[in-house]
Image: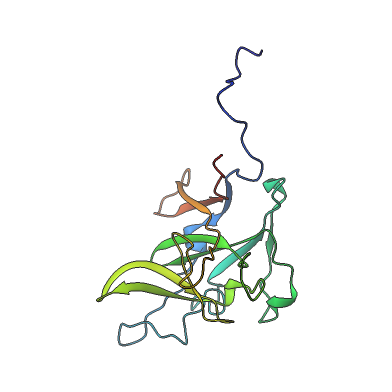
Length: 187
């Protein structure tokens, strides 16, 4: 037995390594306010409407489960995303100042893999108090909690990725580097 190995610790699973997806300034807020200070539903689309400077509101990466170093950024071209293979893709965006990373397609969706980059973010409220944030799939109007992944109907769950904000070495502003990874399975 190797003196440096721990027999009680399981080897790390492949595909759960952290990787950088950019800085916080590369993810504009996807919930712009209109003149009245309220969110306009026509503007609320994760990737469909970018910032005023033309940037998209999110990034999508293809991340193979076997080797995250082989990840590639996926171009979000128009509304014809349903023709693409959405397997092993992560959608990263900022909503109300928080960076979220979720599976791009709902792996257990009854309507089979509709891209959530066309979804509409919203606040989950109870009597006017914001409890969480959600995303509505525009194909079947099901909603998913962005923190837990739970659906509003049925026993479906959206895969939520872990997000970490790390200091940028030598940065003069408040910009942070965004790192994401699949949540490791326990057991």
